[in-house]
Image (cartoon, rainbow, N blue to C red; front, side):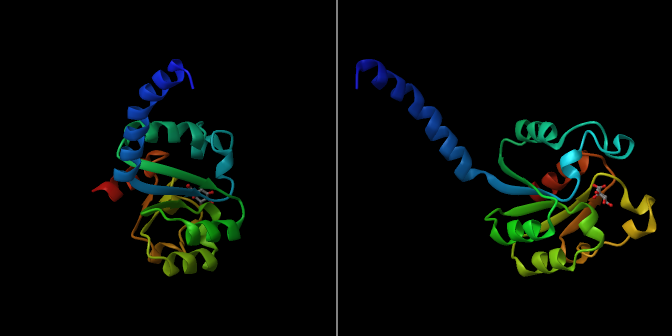
Length: 162
Ligand code: DQA
């Protein structure tokens, strides 16, 4: 190792330590998006807006220094069940999308874990078709936020921090 690499390590160490400290002291939240939410920004823009979730997540990361976000999206019901069972997060923000209205498996997964889950929806599901008025998961969640656009996720994060 030459003197340059020592200098580089010295420069790096404080920032790595700071990152480790920030990670340890942060609240770990998992955001889970269900089917078709990978198409946010392209899909039914008049209902779901024109922004991808990845771009919105950058805003959340910038806004909430005290939170470490993990993000998972799947179109597959069983994969959503698996991530709920496997995560070590302290809280879960879940937009189960269409599975909200159909999935006993997701409801049972939420009931089976000790981690609080907040149900979110981008649109106001109660102002839409009748089949969207029913949530099979809602009763197992800490609460539900629906109808505030992508801001529904931000409100859920704030609820976890409150
Ligand atoms: C949704 C509402 C659901 O009814 C729908 O199936 C979705 C998205 C929402 O975020 O508004 O895919 O969960």
